[in-house]
Length: 99
Image: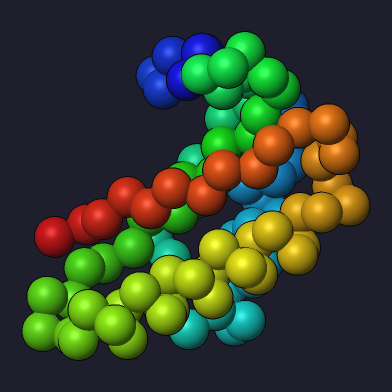
């Protein structure tokens, strides 16, 4: 991924998308602790948007159920951002786990 450094200050568009994603709280199957959005290029140098929801890992939960919840989050994010990002940008949703 060739986006700016994770420690770099987010752009206005990245901040706007993070604020928007925080409003999805009641629509998701599990609580998202925080959202990080990075806009840049993917490994193929194509325009991309990376969304990183940070979630708590419940190691006692069945892996299938956990995967289904993650897929629901990914699907909701894609649907909600579809009209908010440039359609030429590929959207990646990558989960960060908090233990």
